[in-house]
Amino acid sequence: MTAARRTPDELLALDAVLTEDERDTAATVRDMLTDVVRPHVAQWYLDGTLPARDLAIEFGKLGLLGMHLEGYGCAGTSATMYGVACRELEAADGGVRSLVSVQGSLAMYPIHRYGSEEQKQEWLPRMATGEAVGCFGLTEPDAGSDPSSMRTKARRDGGGETADWILDGGKMWITNAPIADVAVIWARTDDGVRGFVVPTDVRGFSVQEVKRKLSLRASVTGEITLEDVRLPHDAVLPGVTGLRGPLSCLTEARFGIIWGATGAIRDSLLTAIEYADTRVQFGKPISAFQLTQAKLADATAAYAKAVLLALHIGRLKDGAYGSGVKVSPELVSVGKLDNVRTALSVARTMRTILGGSGITSEYSPLRHAANLETVLTYEGTSEVHQLIIGKALTGQDAFA
Ligand code: FAD
Image (tube, rainbow, N blue to C red; front, side, top):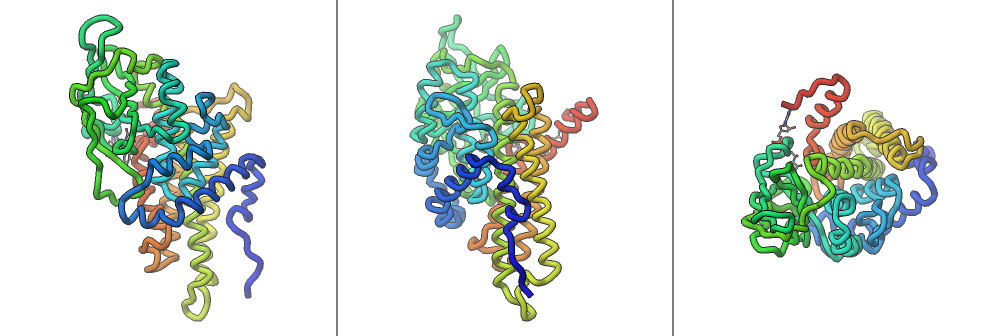
């Protein structure tokens, strides 16, 4: 016997916890993705490509790039609104969400927060429209989880504050690098780690695309080589010295991941429910079997917790509980660790409901699961987040 059905969002009354503006933004982003991404994303994934520059222009028109930043052509929305957009983007594909996260949180954010007025004027308005694409170079072939071991160096060519900088080194796994106009490169200097705003057409800067990925295939990734790259004295970000610069950018980007993971959960769940409804075995739809329902019920419960954690962190970030209560990097680690792990587990389980069909590109759960392997690793691996949380709880630094 069939009864009335509700979607996971309806059952959990999740719309009720968003404002009307947030719901409207979600619908607008979802509609745009239905037009420009969803019909093509499975093929992009198979081909290992992404028309990132064209998409950047589309996303710029909707104000999604540097969405939560103020001024310089940025939309200046709340953090939660940015999160809501990330949820829709990752429901379409994690690689597509990564394009927006890297542009806004990793390339525009450091320029906005630590850049000179000239750097902001030169780059932010064009990056907000998607006319210019940015990337963020922290990881190196031999420095991943431990960025303090980075080898990329910046030295002054001569003395005085107006001497040029010379950069040497390399960066690995850099999202957007092969198509970027500007790279925010973190390098060791005599005074500590500094950030540099590097136009990618400067002499000595080259990028090799990373091919043969099995995860985040609808995303462009590159390895950057810096050989005697000469930059003017004012290419350095004046507002920050030390690893707290790049780490603060990662905290911003991790917030987008916390929300994005909930999009992968929702899309996997909806795909499995729809499939289970039409697939008949043993004389009835597989949705009528208790074991299928148990998987869907557990995934819905996991989805509820993931969204509420994302919302809690978003509301805190927006000052909803008073300006005295701040979002700590450790709380962001809890969100990134748990929502990504949960999303990966749900996507894999939803894939099982699709049986053999679930291993084809026609259905999204396995694509989400494969993407989430990267999301589990980048912006701090799950182990690194466990260590961050463990350190906060025990006072013991277990990193070394
Ligand atoms: P490693 O650091 O070598 O880690 C290998 C394993 O060892 C992991 O399981 C790790 O958790 C574990 N490990 C390391 N240290 C410890 C410890 N102390 N205790 C316990 N376990 C430990 N980087 C950028 O700068 N910009 C980008 O745009 C970017 N985009 C990316 C896109 C993709 C598709 C990928 C795959 C990566 C990207 N990264 C980017 C890099 C990413 O952030 C790193 O891969 C990540 O930080 C892990 O570094 P690693 O790969 O060198 O692994």
